[in-house]
Image 1 (cartoon, rainbow, N blue to C red):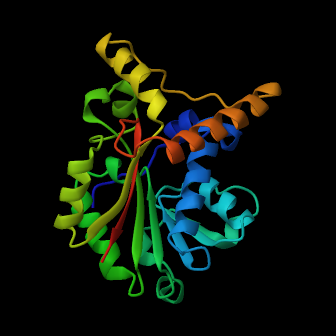
Image 2 (cartoon, rainbow, N blue to C red; image 1 turned 135 degrees about the vertical axis):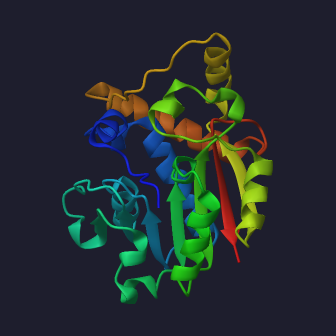
Length: 242
């Protein structure tokens, strides 16, 4: 398989210490938590493939979820997560006992890094015998593909039709599609139209800005819940089911 894992400089650029307090991370975590509860998977064994340092795993475990993680990159997991995260290995090398209990796999901003995402998702389906659902988040809308995507090794951004087509090619069906971060779409489109380059490094909030980011996260969760699902956004979420 082609190497797809992040390099150390990429991890430091978009996952610096404190990134768990950034509004984007906070909002996405809350949206993921809500989706898992709404679909009835709060008490199931969940595996985050491409988990990085384990930011989502940590958030969900603190919320009472039985969440585990694996990442191909040899990245150091956050403190206290070592028993629950395996890094530097392919998911197919996980302990068979763990693999045999996984009912939900999460691919959170992962498949855009893969040249052949069909093959990858098909391998997941074969490896986890009890798998019922795959929760997917992706960067959305091809028209705002930018230097940020190129820097992070993205092959593409996604629309509704592309995800439907992907699910069919993988032998799954798609439900629960939604764009989110709706109000970030117009600024992103204006930047792209004006050929303005996006900063490839993300700075975590400090001091009082942590509170500001918490407020922003609540706002973006609210817009996810209240605005039409097909209203354009910079990210998209869906479920694949067998």
